[in-house]
Amino acid sequence: MAERRFVVEGPQAVREALADLVELYAVDPADPLARAAADAGVPVQPVSAAVLAAMAETVTPQGLLGVAPLRDVPLDALPARPRLVAVLDAVADPGNAGTVLRTADAAGADAVVLTAGSTDPHGGKAVRASAGSLWHLPVVAGPPLDEALAALRGRGLQVLATSGSGEADLDDLADAGGLAAPTAWLFGNEAHGLPPGALAAADVRVRVPLRGRAESLNLAAAAAVCLYATSRAHR
Image (cartoon, rainbow, N blue to C red; front, side, top):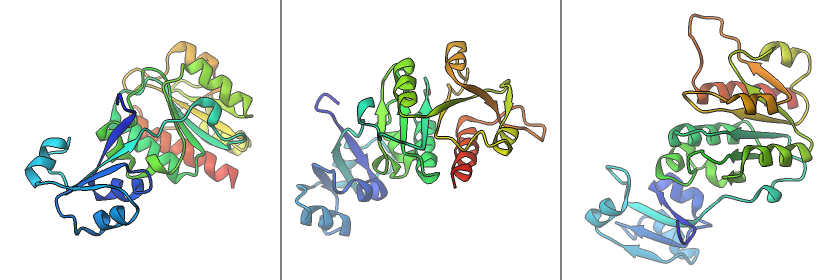
């Protein structure tokens, strides 16, 4: 990370990162992705399976390992008029962070913000969980929550926070047209949710309706429900 670069493992991530790669290590230099990288001017280094396994984080690497520049962008580089943004506050699990990034991409979000104290979106598990979506939309990593919300409000977004005790029901809010405006969704830590200060900073605190006997939804599921509800309202 000192050189602001990170490891990209496996064919799917390498395929999405191809235009950004600064180096690629390949067990089989004749692999189509390795050849595509070489054709694009990326240095391709042949290595043995044992060497690649020592370099990789996964137990069974898939023959390709790339190196790419970090993808995080500053707050002031966000789109001027975004419609949908996911904000992760103190989210610790890299698998959850990567999954939410993938979901935000699929729902048509314009950016994802991970506030200070959140996991690094460039960690191996987060990159794998993003399934390539890390390269599809801007990712802002590390700003304080208050600065992130100020930047998003300055771009015309309302801030909705998820909370099991929120005053607004997601379905009722959608029916009333409350999701039609440009929206930043604020999601909290897996174990503790959003702290009181973050909840107070939101324009509305929203609960996802639970019609069965489940106590709650996990972070990734709640994010998917909220982001897709907003995406549908925007259509």
